[in-house]
Image 1 (tube, rainbow, N blue to C red):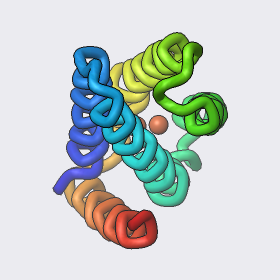
Image 2: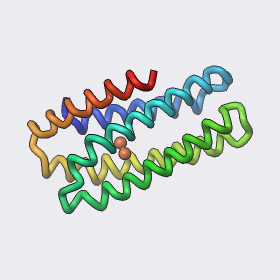
Image 3: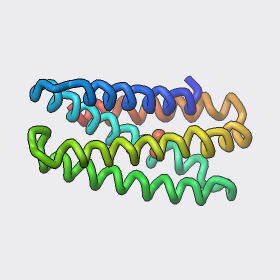
Image 4: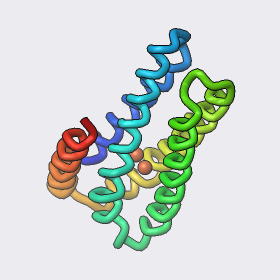
Length: 147
Ligand SMILES: [Fe+2]
Ligand SMILES: [Fe+2]
């Protein structure tokens, strides 16, 4: 599958989990959903950082976007760590989660609105398919390691 489609699917998936989290009141369910969000974001960030960004950042028009994206990832990871420590039943959890969600939303908008269209201009379909395969295999490895 095309690399950009894979990453967009991940984005949709996480968005859906955040929405579910917003509706969930049961404590066990909230914990379960947060763990999934945590894992999915970690893996998504990992495959972008190890496969996708390194494959695109040598293009002058993309290098700055990648640098910004890496900063966003660091912020999200720091928030995830704070949330892990707080636990989903803590008082501050909701507002921190909101902060994470807004940060992720903003980051996704930049990727889908600026970075991916540029990548579509600079890479052909064959290259994006190949990159998609590399992403899939990195994701497979990351999932096996996460369980
Ligand atoms: Fe992404
Ligand atoms: Fe990203």
